[in-house]
Length: 223
Image 1 (cartoon, rainbow, N blue to C red):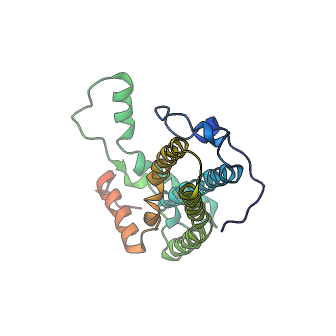
Image 2 (image 1 turned 180 degrees about the vertical axis):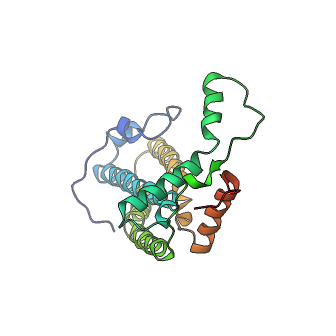
Image 3 (image 1 turned 45 degrees about the vertical axis):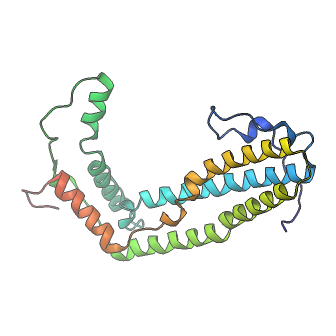
């Protein structure tokens, strides 16, 4: 059973801050006839899910930065050069598309000019990438053992309380309706937690190579 502690009570409105405006309001029973112990458990679960989602976003962002972390960070100049090169690769062709969308004009049929190779300076080291990969895995493991596990525990506890609740059938159905909609929102990110893995060295190296071949002008000697 979850340890009972003093928790912040969440109003019906704040409980739905992260749900779409199309969702119905939270049941009034959360603030009136529903037992205070259960209201506290729902508040606890809400904040547990919020914290887990925040850590999920940070891990996801860390994976998106993988091409930057191919370079060691101990040399600021080299790291800046590498990041600048990655930025140029990722922005290739995007400016023209955004311009077309902004001014509602058709996109040119001519392909975007490739990036001159001499302007791109990559500094790639396998040891630096593997160190980043290990750091990410450590953070991921802590997320699974900590925030995610705690959210799942809160979820089980809330559902147990709902099943055992002695409130009226109508009130219970209202609570279940809110709870299912809340879980549907959580599932949007919770279903992807197993994807929070940094690709192995050969895969990310192939990813960078493909980007360079597609977007850089390799006719001149590549620096």
